[in-house]
Image (cartoon, rainbow, N blue to C red; front, side, top):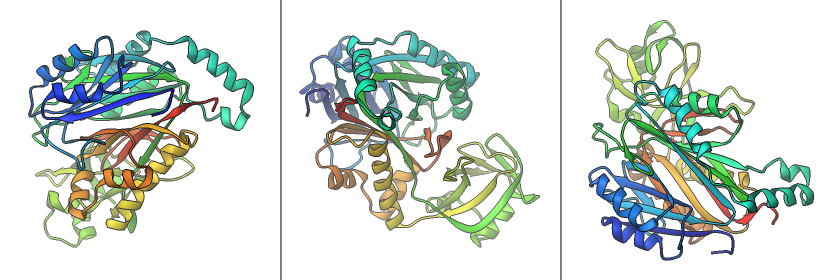
Length: 408
């Protein structure tokens, strides 16, 4: 590690062993990330880790699988912990409860409390001043004094409205990155951690830093020539495409007589973002309803053009490499990478297994032994290259923190 950022990583079925590993290189962490299987005792996990990390802000949640740089491949039924310490990092955390009842209010409350609790450091403002005096305008424009990490309940079904609350309350273009909590595909109850253990809640963690920091977004799918206009939808339920029942049109797309959930692992649907880059964001089907409508894992807007997407092993590998490169570029291309935090859709993880891909191996091949933590999510939050903030499916969103300050 370098001189400005200390990072520790641990992963084990035993939370005490996991946090002890993560504290090998870090004495007084500013932030502790905890991603744990819901099959384990979440209350015991939180209490064990909080007892060890002292005054550190502890955030995270339950998962559909955990991974880190201390394991060879993603695991289940474990606890993954990352500790982060730097004189150039300030942290604030906030929690909004009852996300399923009022997600907009939940988002507003969480981000407001996060900024209210923010603990800054004198080095932040002084180095920011130095950067403004010593850097070119083109470099200054890439600075990110604040980043918001969001971790909403993955069963609320209302992450978009939660994000609207976060953006509305913060009244800024602060980068947003995150993932929805899971429960190992049981779809019963997920947990959120924010200096305490919660459910049916949304977490916002604000990082204030002069470290080089960047975010990336990507998925492995490419568009086909099969498209249809969404002519009737409500929230996440799609009723009609081209004024026809949604299930009939999709059966025609796939050339099948019956739709099954398994069909949508390698073929899914996308909508072009409205920004200048026109990237596709993924809309993953969740289930086929008895009336022929289709429930998705994210909102499908009336008037949008839904496109059938497909992928293969080469696309999946290259897309993850490009996502990682994009985050590094967004961070200002630091020579020393301090850590990587990944929010990876559980459906993308299942696709990787099917295709024989291990994202951890890709990271090691590209960057060597870099501290990594992440979990398989029930949805991912982030921004496209053009800045459109959203809740996505079958996607990876990730954050790179450089072991360098912005004056380097």
